[in-house]
Amino acid sequence: MTYKTWNWMLNQWPHFSYDKEVLAELEYTFSQNSGTILGVFRHMQGISKDDFVVEVLSNEALKTSEIEGENLDRESVQSSIKKNLGLSTENRKVSPAEYGISEMMVDLYLNFDTPLSHTLLYQWHEMLTNGRRDLSNIGRYRTHEAPMQVVSGRLDNPNIHFEAPPSKVVFNEMEQFINWFNCEHDTAGKSKLFPLAKAGIAHLYFVSIHPFEDGNGRIGRAIAEKSIAMSLKQPSLISLSHAIEIRKKDYYQSLEKSNTNLEITDWLVYFGQTILDAQQDTLNQIEFLIEKTRFFDRFSSLLNERQMRVVKRLFEAGHTGFKGGLSADNYQRIAKTSASTATRDLQELVQNNILLKTGVLKGSRYFLNIKIK
Image 1 (cartoon, rainbow, N blue to C red):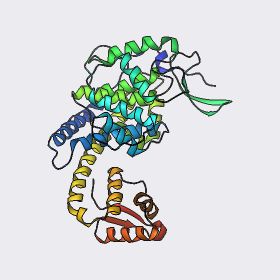
Image 2: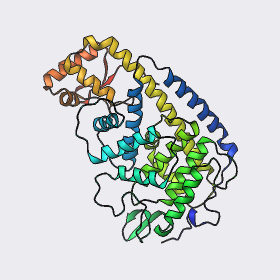
Image 3: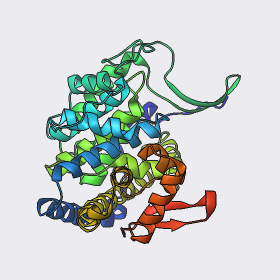
Image 4: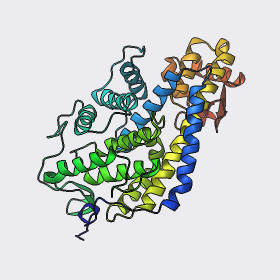
């Protein structure tokens, strides 16, 4: 087994360095996009801002969980987020994991300007681990003596991707991290940090400490979003995890490349571009919700009850739609109807230009007839 010197072992830890000039264009684009998103959000017409917020928080809850291999139910997550926001929602059964991540996302949104603290992080961890019985430390930093390692491969020949600081030093490391996060300077206490740099360092710094027994990735991504929101002095209104999950392999590779040194320009370029991708996704979501309003204004009178139920479900899947498109089997299940009725309903939807069809026979797939960039 090859021994590695991890970043937290270096004498200069945690004083990260990077090339500010390389990040300058990304920071400028981020500032422009932030102004655009805020302007569009403030002047939304014909759609509910609450619907938009629920959509953003739902995407983040679902995708940050999916990155960790946990697939949650979208409708349950949306219902839980609405409940936590005080919005009306149907009385739906929600699993502890779905409720916990939803509670955390709403707290992150509503209390974006609250300073980071041990107590807040403990609360987030309790939310994330809602219903768990397999952890020794819930709502507190890890205490086990065994090394905290990120490992893959066989048990007899493991590949150690990272090893975090021992549990006995975690509280002191987190005290230093929290003090840094709540100030406006870099990790050496010198110059003020721009938003992308601050968020990227915050995420890498936190996951390098890996303070919890589980949930570090999800909390680390929430910390990055909180950093962005505090820099903007308003909720970020992006789903960072959605952008990360699309190229999840790049995310883990970029983290691994950055965990043995303190020069992190490449990491910040990757993470900064990912935040810009998340901003573009937000603009696409806004456009999608506007198109949704226009869509129902145009087609509602042409839809029977079954078709309306299916179309609403398609919109609930968001602007990226059903993975692979809607099938006839999907239609039957959602509409709770027979195969022959599903076939007839789908034919009508295509004839009325409500759905677009691709493929033939069992390979037929259907998509909403709307255009999003």
